[in-house]
Length: 224
Image (cartoon, rainbow, N blue to C red; front, side, top):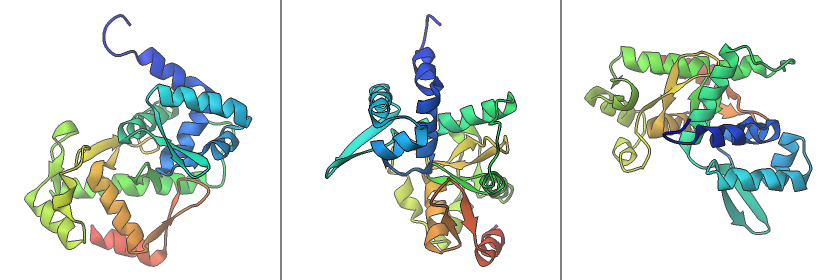
């Protein structure tokens, strides 16, 4: 590819299995240490350090030192969105893991995509928000309606503070398991944060899965 951005470089960074596992483990939105990422990738700490240096230099990860440890996280939501899209492409092309684990059905039901809700519940949420005209438009033109601003304000989200961030308020994010869109952007992040604050759901500490309590699921469905 002679013109435009160098996708080959990004592809080479993501294409290594160890680095791909590291990136996937950071899709929770949490920062992890080099030791934790080495365990996720199944490599030695020395090998992990070399991989992490390449990912930081390539702009896919950001590092922050705290005490004796360096913590690594995805550089920004755009990286998470690109990874989610690649997961969807891999699923559509049939490039799936040989073994599926017991958490797979739960991951498809509801999971964290960086900092917003993905999976079946995330897609249903996006569909209902559009059907009720709380959000409108598509792609980069997706945004809150006046009715939507009132709805989310009543739900306890400081809507006016969302517009001051660098990321879009509303952004469609292609869901890898459902192959349709869920809601990203600062609104998607705030909405999932509110769900956690209300204790309707909790994150699985060992994966990206989101577990709704029966009461929380009923409240979430009633909200829409």
